[in-house]
Image (cartoon, rainbow, N blue to C red; front, side):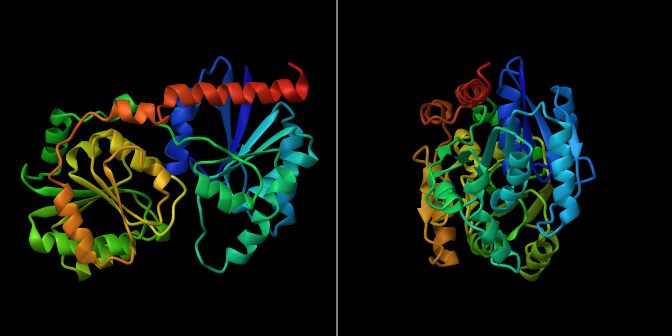
Length: 366
Protein backbone atom coordinates (compact mmCIF):
# COMPACT_ATOMS: atom_id res chain seq x y z
CA UNK A 1 0.00 0.00 0.00
CA UNK A 2 1.19 3.53 -0.72
CA UNK A 3 0.15 6.69 1.12
CA UNK A 4 -0.56 9.82 -0.94
CA UNK A 5 -0.38 13.22 0.74
CA UNK A 6 -3.06 15.69 -0.39
CA UNK A 7 -2.20 19.31 0.35
CA UNK A 8 -5.38 21.37 0.87
CA UNK A 9 -6.63 24.48 2.63
CA UNK A 10 -8.97 22.36 4.74
CA UNK A 11 -11.60 19.64 4.23
CA UNK A 12 -14.85 21.56 4.49
CA UNK A 13 -17.82 20.63 2.28
CA UNK A 14 -16.76 22.48 -0.86
CA UNK A 15 -16.63 21.21 -4.42
CA UNK A 16 -12.91 20.37 -4.41
CA UNK A 17 -13.13 18.66 -1.04
CA UNK A 18 -16.27 16.70 -1.98
CA UNK A 19 -14.55 15.48 -5.14
CA UNK A 20 -11.58 14.28 -3.08
CA UNK A 21 -13.85 12.46 -0.65
CA UNK A 22 -15.74 10.78 -3.51
CA UNK A 23 -12.42 9.34 -4.71
CA UNK A 24 -11.26 8.49 -1.20
CA UNK A 25 -14.40 6.49 -0.38
CA UNK A 26 -14.27 4.59 -3.67
CA UNK A 27 -10.54 3.92 -4.04
CA UNK A 28 -9.07 0.53 -3.08
CA UNK A 29 -7.53 1.51 0.26
CA UNK A 30 -5.54 -1.73 0.36
CA UNK A 31 -3.57 -0.24 -2.54
CA UNK A 32 -3.75 3.52 -1.89
CA UNK A 33 -4.39 5.47 1.31
CA UNK A 34 -5.04 9.23 1.41
CA UNK A 35 -3.53 11.55 4.05
CA UNK A 36 -4.14 15.30 4.28
CA UNK A 37 -2.02 18.35 5.06
CA UNK A 38 -4.48 21.07 6.13
CA UNK A 39 -3.84 24.79 6.60
CA UNK A 40 -6.43 25.50 9.31
CA UNK A 41 -6.24 24.74 13.07
CA UNK A 42 -9.91 23.85 13.50
CA UNK A 43 -11.54 20.55 12.54
CA UNK A 44 -13.22 20.51 9.14
CA UNK A 45 -16.44 18.82 8.01
CA UNK A 46 -14.78 15.74 6.52
CA UNK A 47 -12.00 15.25 9.09
CA UNK A 48 -13.79 12.64 11.19
CA UNK A 49 -14.68 10.54 8.14
CA UNK A 50 -11.08 10.77 6.92
CA UNK A 51 -9.87 9.29 10.20
CA UNK A 52 -12.51 6.55 10.05
CA UNK A 53 -11.27 5.61 6.57
CA UNK A 54 -7.72 5.31 7.88
CA UNK A 55 -6.38 8.69 6.81
CA UNK A 56 -3.99 10.89 8.76
CA UNK A 57 -4.45 14.64 9.14
CA UNK A 58 -1.56 17.05 9.67
CA UNK A 59 -1.96 20.77 10.34
CA UNK A 60 0.31 23.69 9.54
CA UNK A 61 -0.30 27.50 9.57
CA UNK A 62 -2.17 29.35 6.84
CA UNK A 63 -0.43 29.62 3.49
CA UNK A 64 1.60 32.82 3.28
CA UNK A 65 3.69 33.18 0.10
CA UNK A 66 5.85 35.91 1.73
CA UNK A 67 6.58 34.02 4.96
CA UNK A 68 10.03 32.48 5.36
CA UNK A 69 8.69 30.74 8.47
CA UNK A 70 5.82 29.14 6.54
CA UNK A 71 8.17 27.75 3.90
CA UNK A 72 10.49 26.50 6.61
CA UNK A 73 7.60 24.65 8.28
CA UNK A 74 6.71 23.05 4.94
CA UNK A 75 10.31 21.99 4.37
CA UNK A 76 10.60 20.48 7.86
CA UNK A 77 7.36 18.59 7.31
CA UNK A 78 8.55 16.96 4.10
CA UNK A 79 11.92 16.08 5.66
CA UNK A 80 10.16 14.55 8.66
CA UNK A 81 7.86 12.47 6.41
CA UNK A 82 9.99 10.88 3.68
CA UNK A 83 7.37 8.12 3.43
CA UNK A 84 5.33 10.31 1.06
CA UNK A 85 6.43 9.28 -2.42
CA UNK A 86 3.54 11.23 -3.96
CA UNK A 87 2.38 14.73 -3.00
CA UNK A 88 -0.87 15.90 -4.64
CA UNK A 89 -1.44 19.67 -4.22
CA UNK A 90 -4.85 21.36 -4.47
CA UNK A 91 -3.99 25.03 -3.87
CA UNK A 92 -4.58 26.27 -7.41
CA UNK A 93 -2.31 29.23 -8.32
CA UNK A 94 -0.33 28.99 -5.09
CA UNK A 95 0.40 25.27 -5.48
CA UNK A 96 3.95 26.12 -6.59
CA UNK A 97 4.95 26.94 -3.02
CA UNK A 98 4.30 23.47 -1.57
CA UNK A 99 5.57 21.83 -4.76
CA UNK A 100 8.87 23.70 -4.56
CA UNK A 101 9.51 22.58 -0.98
CA UNK A 102 8.52 19.01 -1.83
CA UNK A 103 11.01 19.05 -4.71
CA UNK A 104 13.78 20.39 -2.46
CA UNK A 105 13.11 17.53 -0.05
CA UNK A 106 13.32 14.83 -2.73
CA UNK A 107 9.63 13.95 -3.29
CA UNK A 108 9.71 12.37 -6.75
CA UNK A 109 6.05 12.63 -7.79
CA UNK A 110 4.65 16.13 -7.28
CA UNK A 111 1.14 16.67 -8.68
CA UNK A 112 -0.50 20.07 -9.21
CA UNK A 113 -4.28 19.88 -9.62
CA UNK A 114 -6.31 22.72 -11.18
CA UNK A 115 -9.88 23.09 -9.95
CA UNK A 116 -10.73 26.46 -11.51
CA UNK A 117 -10.50 28.34 -14.80
CA UNK A 118 -9.98 31.83 -13.33
CA UNK A 119 -9.34 33.79 -10.15
CA UNK A 120 -11.05 36.64 -8.32
CA UNK A 121 -9.91 40.08 -9.50
CA UNK A 122 -8.66 41.34 -6.14
CA UNK A 123 -5.43 42.58 -4.55
CA UNK A 124 -4.01 39.04 -4.46
CA UNK A 125 -4.40 38.47 -8.20
CA UNK A 126 -0.92 39.58 -9.29
CA UNK A 127 0.71 37.41 -6.63
CA UNK A 128 -1.36 34.40 -7.72
CA UNK A 129 -0.59 34.94 -11.40
CA UNK A 130 3.13 35.10 -10.58
CA UNK A 131 3.04 31.77 -8.74
CA UNK A 132 0.78 30.23 -11.38
CA UNK A 133 3.62 30.59 -13.90
CA UNK A 134 5.95 28.75 -11.52
CA UNK A 135 3.84 25.59 -11.13
CA UNK A 136 5.37 23.75 -14.08
CA UNK A 137 8.88 24.41 -12.69
CA UNK A 138 8.18 22.29 -9.62
CA UNK A 139 5.42 19.83 -10.57
CA UNK A 140 6.18 16.51 -12.23
CA UNK A 141 2.53 15.94 -13.16
CA UNK A 142 -0.37 18.26 -13.97
CA UNK A 143 -4.04 17.34 -13.48
CA UNK A 144 -7.20 19.39 -14.05
CA UNK A 145 -10.93 18.97 -13.55
CA UNK A 146 -11.60 20.19 -17.11
CA UNK A 147 -9.86 21.28 -20.29
CA UNK A 148 -10.56 24.94 -19.52
CA UNK A 149 -9.17 24.65 -15.99
CA UNK A 150 -6.01 22.97 -17.26
CA UNK A 151 -5.40 25.42 -20.10
CA UNK A 152 -5.85 28.40 -17.81
CA UNK A 153 -3.75 27.12 -14.90
CA UNK A 154 -0.86 25.47 -16.69
CA UNK A 155 -0.09 28.04 -19.40
CA UNK A 156 0.42 25.63 -22.30
CA UNK A 157 2.06 22.73 -20.42
CA UNK A 158 0.64 19.25 -20.99
CA UNK A 159 -1.91 18.04 -18.44
CA UNK A 160 -4.42 15.25 -17.91
CA UNK A 161 -8.09 15.62 -16.96
CA UNK A 162 -9.30 13.79 -13.86
CA UNK A 163 -13.10 13.79 -13.91
CA UNK A 164 -15.03 15.13 -10.93
CA UNK A 165 -16.75 11.76 -10.65
CA UNK A 166 -19.66 10.81 -8.38
CA UNK A 167 -21.44 7.75 -7.02
CA UNK A 168 -24.31 7.87 -9.51
CA UNK A 169 -26.50 5.44 -7.53
CA UNK A 170 -26.89 7.98 -4.71
CA UNK A 171 -28.54 10.54 -6.98
CA UNK A 172 -31.19 8.50 -8.79
CA UNK A 173 -34.49 10.40 -8.62
CA UNK A 174 -36.76 9.24 -5.81
CA UNK A 175 -40.31 10.52 -5.41
CA UNK A 176 -40.26 9.39 -1.78
CA UNK A 177 -37.13 11.45 -1.01
CA UNK A 178 -38.64 14.40 -2.83
CA UNK A 179 -41.77 14.29 -0.67
CA UNK A 180 -39.77 13.85 2.55
CA UNK A 181 -37.52 16.86 1.89
CA UNK A 182 -40.44 19.06 0.89
CA UNK A 183 -42.24 18.13 4.10
CA UNK A 184 -39.10 18.89 6.09
CA UNK A 185 -38.98 22.43 4.66
CA UNK A 186 -42.78 22.84 4.51
CA UNK A 187 -42.79 23.28 0.75
CA UNK A 188 -46.18 22.52 -0.87
CA UNK A 189 -46.18 19.90 -3.64
CA UNK A 190 -47.13 22.32 -6.43
CA UNK A 191 -44.61 25.01 -5.46
CA UNK A 192 -41.80 25.48 -7.97
CA UNK A 193 -38.41 24.89 -6.30
CA UNK A 194 -35.37 26.60 -7.82
CA UNK A 195 -32.16 25.14 -6.44
CA UNK A 196 -28.46 25.95 -6.12
CA UNK A 197 -25.56 24.23 -4.38
CA UNK A 198 -22.36 26.17 -3.82
CA UNK A 199 -20.18 28.21 -1.52
CA UNK A 200 -21.38 31.76 -0.89
CA UNK A 201 -18.50 33.40 -2.73
CA UNK A 202 -17.97 35.81 -5.63
CA UNK A 203 -17.63 33.30 -8.53
CA UNK A 204 -20.99 31.66 -7.76
CA UNK A 205 -22.82 34.94 -8.53
CA UNK A 206 -25.56 34.55 -5.91
CA UNK A 207 -26.69 38.16 -6.21
CA UNK A 208 -27.57 37.65 -9.87
CA UNK A 209 -29.26 34.36 -8.97
CA UNK A 210 -31.46 36.26 -6.50
CA UNK A 211 -32.36 38.79 -9.21
CA UNK A 212 -33.36 35.90 -11.48
CA UNK A 213 -35.42 34.34 -8.71
CA UNK A 214 -37.20 37.65 -8.05
CA UNK A 215 -38.49 37.57 -11.66
CA UNK A 216 -39.56 33.93 -11.22
CA UNK A 217 -41.41 34.62 -7.96
CA UNK A 218 -43.25 37.52 -9.60
CA UNK A 219 -44.76 35.01 -12.05
CA UNK A 220 -45.09 31.77 -10.09
CA UNK A 221 -45.52 30.23 -6.65
CA UNK A 222 -41.84 29.47 -6.11
CA UNK A 223 -39.11 29.10 -3.48
CA UNK A 224 -35.33 29.26 -3.82
CA UNK A 225 -33.35 26.55 -2.03
CA UNK A 226 -29.75 27.66 -1.40
CA UNK A 227 -27.42 24.95 -0.09
CA UNK A 228 -24.08 26.11 1.25
CA UNK A 229 -22.38 28.80 3.30
CA UNK A 230 -19.44 31.15 2.98
CA UNK A 231 -17.93 34.58 3.37
CA UNK A 232 -20.68 36.39 1.43
CA UNK A 233 -23.59 34.98 3.43
CA UNK A 234 -24.38 38.33 5.11
CA UNK A 235 -24.38 40.11 1.75
CA UNK A 236 -26.76 37.47 0.37
CA UNK A 237 -29.06 37.77 3.39
CA UNK A 238 -29.17 41.55 2.93
CA UNK A 239 -30.02 41.14 -0.76
CA UNK A 240 -32.87 38.75 0.15
CA UNK A 241 -34.32 41.39 2.49
CA UNK A 242 -33.84 44.13 -0.10
CA UNK A 243 -35.80 42.13 -2.68
CA UNK A 244 -38.46 41.23 -0.07
CA UNK A 245 -37.88 37.52 -0.58
CA UNK A 246 -37.39 36.47 3.05
CA UNK A 247 -40.38 34.10 2.95
CA UNK A 248 -39.35 32.70 -0.44
CA UNK A 249 -35.67 31.81 0.10
CA UNK A 250 -34.49 28.87 2.21
CA UNK A 251 -30.88 28.94 3.40
CA UNK A 252 -30.02 25.39 4.43
CA UNK A 253 -26.40 25.99 5.39
CA UNK A 254 -23.86 23.23 4.79
CA UNK A 255 -25.55 19.85 4.42
CA UNK A 256 -24.37 16.27 4.16
CA UNK A 257 -27.54 15.10 2.36
CA UNK A 258 -27.21 17.03 -0.92
CA UNK A 259 -28.25 13.93 -2.90
CA UNK A 260 -31.64 14.04 -1.13
CA UNK A 261 -32.05 17.81 -1.34
CA UNK A 262 -31.63 17.68 -5.12
CA UNK A 263 -34.72 15.48 -5.29
CA UNK A 264 -36.88 18.30 -3.92
CA UNK A 265 -35.85 20.76 -6.64
CA UNK A 266 -37.47 21.37 -10.03
CA UNK A 267 -34.72 23.41 -11.70
CA UNK A 268 -31.01 23.88 -10.93
CA UNK A 269 -29.84 27.42 -11.76
CA UNK A 270 -26.10 28.09 -11.90
CA UNK A 271 -25.14 31.57 -13.22
CA UNK A 272 -21.46 31.39 -12.21
CA UNK A 273 -18.88 33.96 -13.30
CA UNK A 274 -16.29 31.19 -13.74
CA UNK A 275 -15.82 27.54 -12.78
CA UNK A 276 -13.50 24.58 -13.21
CA UNK A 277 -15.98 21.76 -13.65
CA UNK A 278 -18.49 21.87 -10.77
CA UNK A 279 -19.24 18.46 -9.30
CA UNK A 280 -22.65 19.79 -8.22
CA UNK A 281 -23.72 20.03 -11.87
CA UNK A 282 -22.82 16.39 -12.45
CA UNK A 283 -24.83 15.50 -9.33
CA UNK A 284 -27.81 17.58 -10.49
CA UNK A 285 -27.86 15.81 -13.86
CA UNK A 286 -27.61 12.41 -12.15
CA UNK A 287 -30.69 13.44 -10.15
CA UNK A 288 -32.57 14.15 -13.38
CA UNK A 289 -32.74 17.90 -12.81
CA UNK A 290 -32.93 20.37 -15.70
CA UNK A 291 -30.00 22.76 -15.30
CA UNK A 292 -29.57 26.35 -16.46
CA UNK A 293 -25.90 27.37 -16.51
CA UNK A 294 -24.06 30.49 -17.60
CA UNK A 295 -21.78 30.56 -20.62
CA UNK A 296 -18.88 31.01 -18.18
CA UNK A 297 -19.30 27.42 -16.94
CA UNK A 298 -17.31 24.93 -19.09
CA UNK A 299 -19.66 23.17 -21.51
CA UNK A 300 -17.74 20.00 -20.61
CA UNK A 301 -20.13 19.71 -17.68
CA UNK A 302 -22.97 18.97 -20.13
CA UNK A 303 -23.25 15.19 -19.85
CA UNK A 304 -26.97 14.98 -20.64
CA UNK A 305 -29.60 16.97 -22.52
CA UNK A 306 -30.67 18.41 -19.16
CA UNK A 307 -28.09 21.21 -19.35
CA UNK A 308 -29.06 24.48 -21.04
CA UNK A 309 -26.37 27.16 -21.36
CA UNK A 310 -27.41 30.82 -21.26
CA UNK A 311 -25.16 33.86 -21.85
CA UNK A 312 -24.73 35.94 -18.71
CA UNK A 313 -25.51 38.96 -20.89
CA UNK A 314 -29.13 37.78 -21.15
CA UNK A 315 -31.36 39.70 -18.76
CA UNK A 316 -32.88 38.20 -15.63
CA UNK A 317 -36.34 37.94 -17.20
CA UNK A 318 -34.94 35.70 -19.93
CA UNK A 319 -33.33 33.44 -17.31
CA UNK A 320 -36.57 33.38 -15.30
CA UNK A 321 -38.71 32.43 -18.31
CA UNK A 322 -36.28 29.64 -19.26
CA UNK A 323 -36.33 28.29 -15.70
CA UNK A 324 -40.12 28.17 -15.64
CA UNK A 325 -40.18 26.51 -19.08
CA UNK A 326 -37.71 23.72 -18.30
CA UNK A 327 -39.27 23.05 -14.89
CA UNK A 328 -42.08 21.22 -16.68
CA UNK A 329 -39.71 18.43 -17.84
CA UNK A 330 -40.39 14.94 -16.48
CA UNK A 331 -37.73 13.61 -14.11
CA UNK A 332 -35.90 10.52 -15.35
CA UNK A 333 -33.21 8.12 -14.12
CA UNK A 334 -30.03 9.53 -15.68
CA UNK A 335 -27.47 7.34 -13.92
CA UNK A 336 -26.64 5.37 -17.08
CA UNK A 337 -25.98 8.57 -19.03
CA UNK A 338 -23.60 9.82 -16.33
CA UNK A 339 -21.82 6.46 -16.24
CA UNK A 340 -21.52 6.40 -20.03
CA UNK A 341 -20.03 9.89 -19.99
CA UNK A 342 -17.16 8.68 -17.79
CA UNK A 343 -18.23 10.30 -14.52
CA UNK A 344 -18.98 7.24 -12.38
CA UNK A 345 -16.68 7.16 -9.35
CA UNK A 346 -15.99 3.40 -9.38
CA UNK A 347 -14.23 3.37 -12.73
CA UNK A 348 -12.44 6.67 -12.10
CA UNK A 349 -11.18 5.66 -8.66
CA UNK A 350 -9.58 2.54 -10.15
CA UNK A 351 -7.88 4.68 -12.81
CA UNK A 352 -6.53 7.04 -10.14
CA UNK A 353 -5.19 4.15 -8.05
CA UNK A 354 -3.47 2.72 -11.14
CA UNK A 355 -2.04 6.15 -11.92
CA UNK A 356 -0.53 6.48 -8.43
CA UNK A 357 0.85 2.93 -8.47
CA UNK A 358 2.45 3.45 -11.88
CA UNK A 359 4.13 6.62 -10.64
CA UNK A 360 5.69 4.71 -7.76
CA UNK A 361 6.94 2.02 -10.15
CA UNK A 362 8.42 4.63 -12.48
CA UNK A 363 10.27 6.41 -9.72
CA UNK A 364 11.24 3.60 -7.40
CA UNK A 365 10.94 0.40 -9.45
CA UNK A 366 8.60 -1.09 -6.83
